[in-house]
Amino acid sequence: MYEDFVKMAQESMKPAMKLAENNTALAVKLMRSQADNAAELMQGNLDHMKALAATKDLNAVVELQQKYVESLNEKLMGVAKENASVIEGAIAEAGKIFEGSLAEVQAQAKKTVENIEKEINKAGKKAAA
Image (cartoon, rainbow, N blue to C red; front, side, top):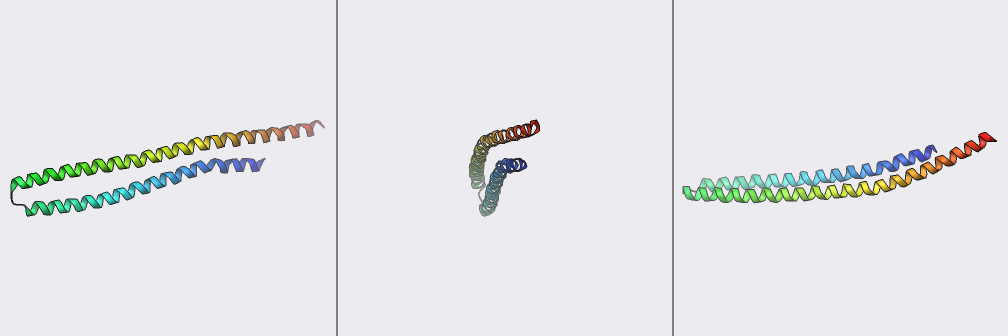
């Protein structure tokens, strides 16, 4: 009976471990994305500053600045959508983990209850004899 409880506890930890792995993968993806995008933004800023420094016409400077802001906005929106997609995927995976684990836990709990009932019946028969 004790072994059943230990086994049930070990089985019940599997979903938590899967969820932790899912969260770790999510964090890694987001950190890589952030690092890559930060490097790209820094390089873009540097290139933009060089272009501004090389431009003598004020109208051209304003035009460069507008184009830069537009491209920066597009880039940031793309990154936000990409990150949202990654997070949505992780949430969907977490949902699958919970759904699967709930069915497993219910089946295991039912089996354990049946085993306990058997043990109680055996103990009752021995006590009556």
